[in-house]
Length: 69
Figure (cartoon, rainbow, N blue to C red):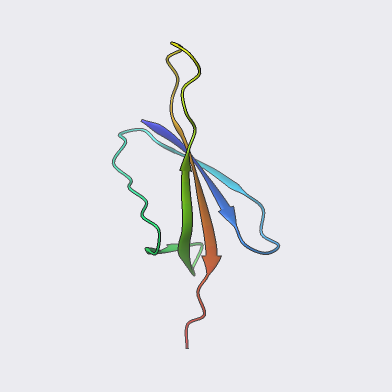
């Protein structure tokens, strides 16, 4: 289980999502489609745990729009 924050390049606002089963994977350079637009993953960052607290991990997925011709 994990929280996902999509960080869009440009004017589009950040978007939050939740992966209840922890099945989604994100790799730099992969292309994904969000809202009918193609995006390339520029970077992925994972929030580190604080001390011994149990928390749901958060992933920041930085996206750059892909020009499709």
